[in-house]
Length: 171
Image (cartoon, rainbow, N blue to C red; front, side, top):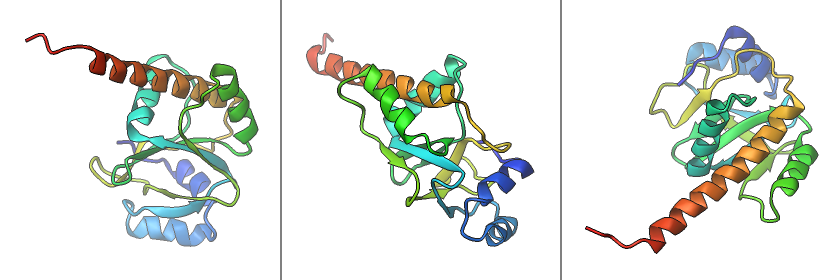
């Protein structure tokens, strides 16, 4: 769980249809999730929680660039925030890594995402794993790092599942 800074709140709320209403809602209840438009200030790559947690762990462990990351526990999904207009770069990076890209949903212009409030708590349905703390301008490396690690993490998880099916209980 991580909380947002004031600058992070300002940046994220600008994606709302009415940023002032969004900020007021968060002042009234900082744990309240809010529906924001993707594609205005950020894009989001959504993936299942198992692949997302492994990807997030690998990015952090290896010191690779990562933007804000959220989890929706009830939907078993995670969202990785990328700089806006990242779809083509992300698709090219995935294509270089594999012929069979991992399952994901790319949210950009015309899509909406429910984001956690600025002070989500552990166990909340919507929670920040890495909250926005300042305006996100992003780096092209962030997009490529996510594509590479998402692919690698999904391949690792598939191999673990395969190993579990191939081995016999030796007890």
